[in-house]
Length: 128
Image (cartoon, rainbow, N blue to C red; front, side, top):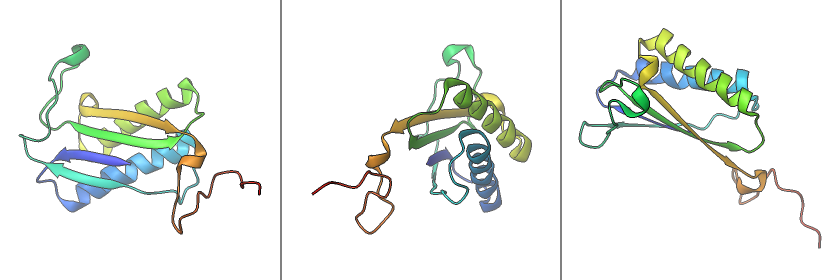
């Protein structure tokens, strides 16, 4: 997961956002609780840009982009619950407006992961 936000946020703010997103993933999308791999990056106003009114949503300069790669197969309803849960959790923990939370899910087949050792841990075993 990659979370991109405006620079200058305190470390505890970034951690609270990351924690909120992970907790929502576990509760709504159901990965294993210890399946947590997150990258946070901060950007100045010249390298984090968004349209302030796209789809008639009023965004501020505090916009946060979240791109999450996950196994394919979640239902549309689960994804919608996840989007709502993340927006609410981030707003509740750090006062970030729900309008400023953009989420993009990238679904991949399970065999497209290697968590180390050069092994595709979720792939079916190859037959000789």
